[in-house]
Image (cartoon, chains in turn yellow, cyan):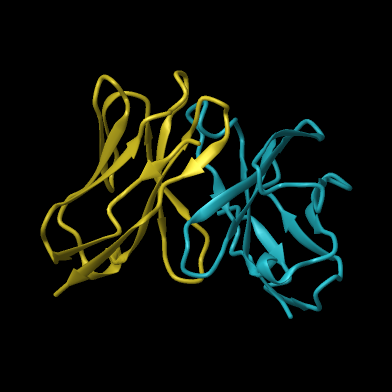
Length: 109
Length: 117
């Protein structure tokens, strides 16, 4: 059974950079890695997606090593409003979509 | 900005009853998904749907579940003979391409909280 694991929780202070890693050993060869943010009682919201190396958009960067068995979401200069649960999403080698275990990020002032 | 909508926001039902959860995906999207999230746990994939048929389904999506796109706008999840353990938040999502396999993001609805008593 494919497992996609993340640290359970992380704490940070406003203005710091936060890096959240997801391990996805059984990722399908042709599939992308997507990261979502979820606030309480809301649906997940897309943050960033990539296939390999590095991707950057206006809110985050995503680092993917050559073997693609992990990925790291980088949030520059977090604010209190970034307090949320962050999930990676991959398709495994049976094409099933698998959310990671989720990382609860708490940002302190 | 277009969004995915879901109704009802909260559904309470008795064990053994059938429920239908409704979703209106974003109008030009072609791929539709259902996920569930048990309280305090991660989001779990149930099923993906494209071109009026199921593309993929998880082990959770057994004969108790079915999906349908009855018209050009709605996408429904039917749960037959509900069990206590079906209590969860159910999210619908849509994308304009196959999520995971191409550069497309899924847009999630606000969810339906199902409570089975």
